[in-house]
Length: 124
Image 1 (cartoon, rainbow, N blue to C red):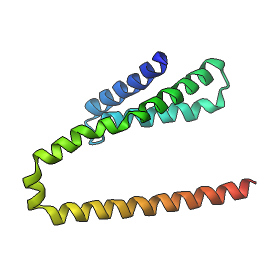
Image 2: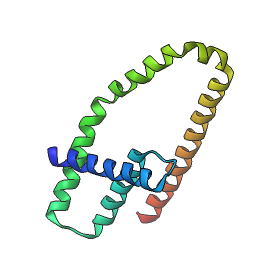
Image 3: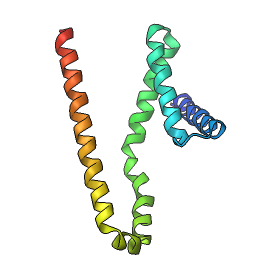
């Protein structure tokens, strides 16, 4: 498990360095996760035992991280309480952004699911 956590953090570091070096507006951890996903998808071509073990360990580590994901929302909740006056002044804008973001996310998720189901039916 320690190896997989190291790999995840290594890709996060690579993402951070890429973001700083290329001066991108995308956060470094997002770039790192995209790179990790790319490497894992490209490694499907190679059936090496070490890569398969690493994939399995990364999945186990990710599942363990997901168990503790509510802890990552505590700082956000504290930040919201600290800036309550800002929220009161911009309540309509904030609610509009939240509703719009939720609807766009639902629509894109539904479209993606529909495409995946159609692809799955064609393959069967």
